Length: 192
Image 1 (tube, rainbow, N blue to C red):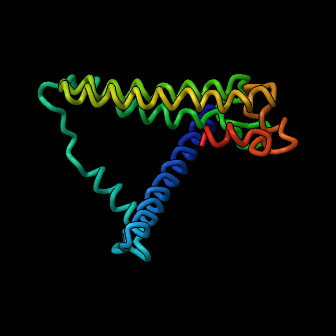
Image 2: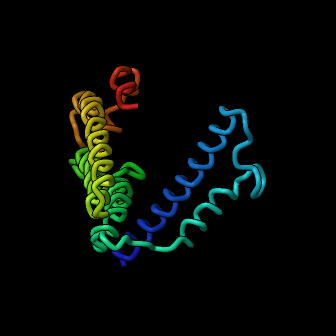
Image 3: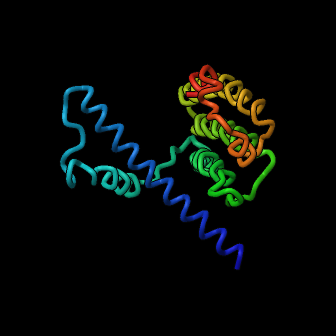
């Protein structure tokens, strides 16, 4: 029964995350439209709120095409790996003082960094499995960019780990008497 409730909670959390992602895409499109002196999405629903739902429906109705020269198993596995690495990192985020879906891990922050690093493998796998040399070159460039972002992010989080004395997300939150953004403004800027 506990396993069923945990799986149901993970499904619920995933659906919430995907809904938030849809809203953030809508907000980004509205802000970009405003910055470019145009309306942005405004056709579907009030203020274009239904545009994100229409885009999601359009993406789900697209044909699942695999090029002839691509490795079909790896080609289909690459986006799954990217989505898994993004969503799995939320398993250790504490929902209250004592509960997260994967439990209170002592290495929760390290797990989040590992999952964000796993994203680069999915991007490279997608470019390599396509069987196209230009896709492979683009994937190599994208992976180099992703890896170059990981070093400043890790160094920015190192200050938080040193201040809190813990890699546990619950321990980091509990150790904050004063918000770490006040104590580490340079680290926050680098992380942001």
